[in-house]
Length: 272
Length: 207
Image (cartoon, rainbow over all chains, first blue to last red):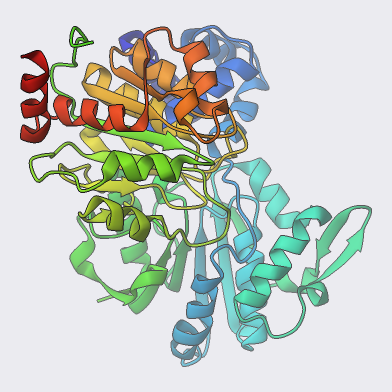
């Protein structure tokens, strides 16, 4: 699919994006990045990456659109119900021992996971004393996350996952259906702080007891993964929890020894 | 038939298939000899949101360990890897596995094209791609990418496939594809991996 010229142009466009817009994709996993950029070339009608680079540098409005292309992660509520069940049954008992809780959802994208977590915390009577930092680098995704409005035709799948994840009532208790959309209850995000944060260029901002970062690290190369996991380690209090996606592991990370497996199959780790 | 040029050394074999592919896969992988040490990476289309039973099924056929890889796991010899449900599986620089949860490609997640194109990029001419029975066109452009990068494309013969849509799509796109029945693909892979069993057979044939 690609040749050496493409690889050269790839390096150049990532450098251009970094210098001009301060978004750092230089340590993203090349395989996924190449796919997404090839798709972006088609979308923007560019025959080469250099052509795309020209457009993002000289046409306002093109970069924000490209940013969505590069960063939107397709998310679902209660994705991997077994993970949420483990969170509820195994991690929540620890969280309940804290008088107040801080939680970091890193790479929250359009918010499906944040609302899932907020619902779970509410049902475990933890939401009122929790502060959830939901961060992402994509402002458009953050706006969508903040709005908490999802297509109604996705809700059946979400409801099924919610039940499988040990939901205590019905998902419909948490949203209002209107005009083909499900509008999630404002009360859920009372204690959620949506904020711009880059795992590639920003630093630790709070001490937290739980970090969830699911299906975000798969888009990073090993060096950037290690940076991100280092931030999580520094942010977590002693014996704090780190939750990753189903295919993500600390096994190949430089930080592997700083965490222990807490719920191995569900990829929940505990800081030593 | 013996005039086929073989890739110098295949460093990996990628296999894709959909409906009807499991049968062909059983023939392909039945009791692989111990000296077959080239890693095999398989994407079969799977139902969403269900844990895949493919590792157990394939392991039973192949008589060697089969696993779903994890992110950044090195691709290593003598292993058979199968893509898990709900993720695209890719191979990245440094010859490690990578994943994405991007939109389905050709209505498929995992998609064969995604694996094949990323593998072609990493292995170039040292790659063999095999496309089996299936009911859609996923894998055809991935196989073309393997060919374009100098690797070898093999397609299950449509008359040998339970569902020939996928093989036909690939044959239409890949000019240099070898078209073989499942048993022939197996023999070819053994030879390209330099296995004793196949070499003996080849010598007999040449005589």
